[in-house]
Image (tube, rainbow, N blue to C red; front, side, top):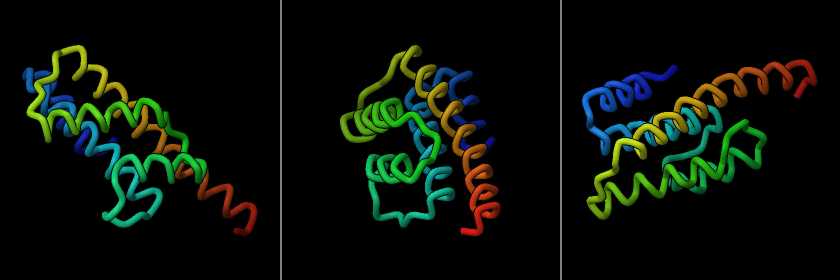
Length: 115
């Protein structure tokens, strides 16, 4: 699991809920960019849509919600409550794990099919 997810867990344990959400979103974004190989110019929402359309095993609705929550924090100064931070961390953990597993399976299938 990525180091950003570990940092998000630590932030949650220390009650740093805005950092938890932000680090959770960053962990998913970094993992998606690595798997899909897309440039930095795409927004998180665009990246999620492209990854999902390419068959990456993610939860697009939850990830879109995570992106919106992160944007509220960064652009509006919103301070999330504990439950929101816990939810964000859970979304990140679930999706990073799925992306990492799915990326490996996808590569293996491509090798088997000769693509």
